[in-house]
Image (cartoon, rainbow, N blue to C red):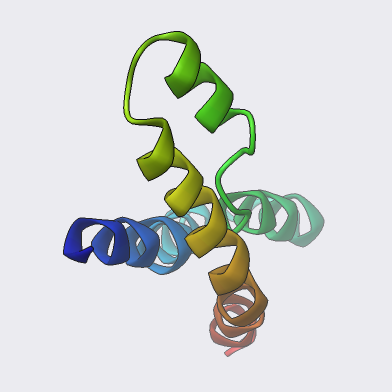
Length: 86
């Protein structure tokens, strides 16, 4: 599903990079900056499929998003922090 791949790319790469560059403008403590970037690199919360099921939305799509972002975080977390240390 192309939308799911686009969401995964946006959530796991583009959004953390946006936060990384935005936070660098404020010159905050590096520990806080690294923590916030790491939080943005985390996969989709697993309870999102439960909420989608409860509210009659697309629970299989939510489950696919959970799976895709969980698998992608193995690669994207180190990648974002390698870019962050440059």
